[in-house]
Length: 468
Image (cartoon, rainbow, N blue to C red; front, side):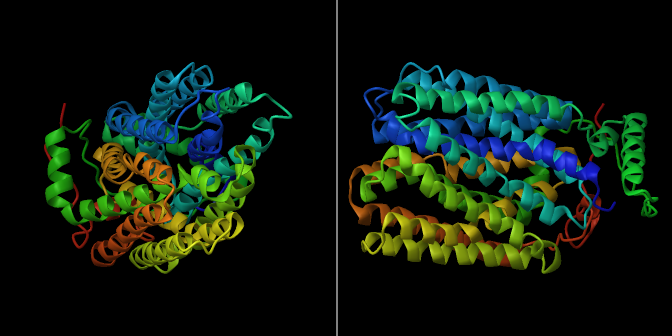
């Protein structure tokens, strides 16, 4: 299927997930300094780092719970439910009255976002044409940074004490995030269920109706008939597969793919969660940037992260997945270590620190986006949602859950060398992931999801007795 206005609407409706996530993380990062003010929640740097870890813990739990439901109940139901959870929890965060309520609402917000990853990645890959899947997926993931930019821009006004008092500004930030999520619910309801998921559950007539409706709308918008469909492929009806089957597929039949997905997710989770969740603390403690000015430095940082996948994304479909994943992870790891060393030596200002992070994460953003693409396209439709959830959960738990708390504690020491050691760990993980990608990477560019599951050279498709 060629690119069309219908595909664009799907991308916008589903890609809003990453905008919301970017908005969430940026709001917390930007208000981090203000949350320590006695006029607000009066949190310490360690408590702010702990709250960030609570958000990630909630995302892990949400990914596992909602990921399972995504495979059993359908993509559409879950991407509506998870957005509703996010919206309610974010609004509740605006009314936090102390440290523990703030932590609880942050964890609940994370649960909604974690669930979104499984439902949305599954739906996007199952609705995108194979020849565009790589660049579209990376571009959608990059919109996280559009949300980050919006969050940064909003804090310049909302955290300005001349506009709103400190006790109120941070609450309005979270309330606006919740209201945005509520508006997106009305856009999401027009996105159809995945035909692949419907077929898997034996709902053939519904799947045919969805596909016929999509084709008719695309032909009307393009004003020409679609090219002939390829030869059909057999699909065995499985319904919802059990955890035993999931374990056999992930850790026996597709062990190499599992090692690849896990290494990519762990590395990017540590690098991003460690640095971005605590960037406002770095600017405040080591460069003296006031909390209401942090957004000025996060805006160019977000722009670099947004442009990276957009500029580099097409090469994942043309040059190839394995080559580009290994290259982006490797370059990111080297640049991360070099920039961390310059920080330790005191060679940088707040401006030059931000400029160097922009260069690092221009590449690292494409690398991180390719991790989500990898874990969503390399496993059968029977367990795609759960596979995404599992790799996201394990990767975030191992690579990202403790990272904000650890870096918060390192920053609180006030010693640059301690922070540099944390950056070295992040760089080493990215370099290790690059090596794994070079060894285990799958040439998935241009191949349909069914071809990836059936190709004997890539791993046979799941073939288990059908479940009632």
